[in-house]
Image (cartoon, rainbow, N blue to C red; front, side, top):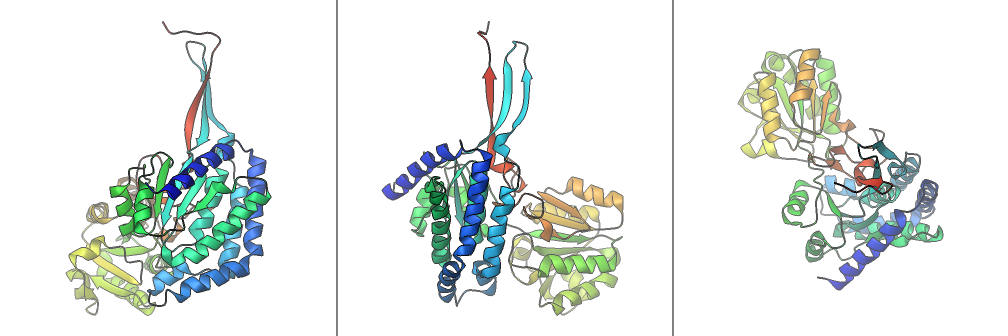
Amino acid sequence: MNEALIKIGQRAQTAADQVALLDTTTKNQALVAMADALEAHQKDIVNANKADLANAVDMPKKFTDRLMVDQQRITDMANGLRAIANLADPTARIDRGWINADRLQILQRRVPLGVIGIIFEARPNVTVDATGLTFKSGNAVILRGGKEAIRTNTTLADVLRSALEEQGLPADAVQLIRDTSHELAQEMMNLTDYIDVLIPRGGQGLIQRVVKTATVPVIETGAGNCHVYIDKDADLKMATDITVNAKVQRPSVCNAAEKLLIHQDVAAKYLRIIAQALIDHGVQLRGDDRTRAIVPQIQAATTEDWDTEYNDLIMAVKVVDSLDDAIHHINHHSTHHSEVIITDNIERGRAFQQRINSACVYVNASTRFTDGGVFGFGAEIGISTQKLHARGPMGLDQLTTIKYEITGNGQVRH
């Protein structure tokens, strides 16, 4: 095992023990100090990001969009930290308490997870969001980003660590691994003595690699093969507006829609209009035979298309026979992230929400709303697509666990 990585883990454990004991006021003051420091060092951060972008000239636009950090995005990061400071501290509360038949007082208390490892790709905002959420919830974080953003991430981490030091708090609550090799990432996935949970942030390839190879417990996040289903009772304008927004507003993120399903009863009327609206926004459409019979210029979809997260201006389209057909297709092909039905029929909308096996299920609203900030969690550390421990946008509560504190007066069990 890499000695430098072990030392990072040891320092993180020490910091986690210290942060877990901090009161809410101290943590909130530190978060505000980190936000102020980001804004004070905007020039340094932007210059570091320009250097990263200069090395990413051959990367696709969807990649550089996630990588780019400008003054507005720094302001957004800082405001995200301030928003977290204004949220309730989950570790300051007792979930419930009772006295059992043996007259033992039992308290169920919310406590930090400990040391959280984050492996992520070219998303520098993760450095800040993860720091804010883990710190407020009483944890320490070890960050390992991709080589494409190493200068930006290093500068951000240095600014955040300095702000903690100036507050007299452990800077090692935030540590960035600066060796971006795959070998070190693999060792981090097996750092079971020091990391309590690992959260991957990025594309499906990264997430599945971590899930399949890590020995540290993993919370699976991120991959978003999200669907829009247009029911036979959908309003055409609403269907068009939501579909375009879900696909086009920011196609590189995990809550962008990748697939469009449309009921056969309205396909002939609606599909030409919706397809043209998407094409007007630069979307490349791929469809099944029934779709192409209505809009011949759409490319033929392959079997792989139904399981692909594009993160780009590409969308696959399928005509379905019924609500049951749509639900079966989505449950079979989705990554269980976010799905939407557009319908004026309350019963079918409710049935869709009950039967779809995804973290977030919408009626008549864009998948783009799946976001910790939008849900009122402040920033988010990821969108969990699994069922154990956490599901959906992960905020402060999802970075804690429970502990039982039992107090007696001499009881022994017979």
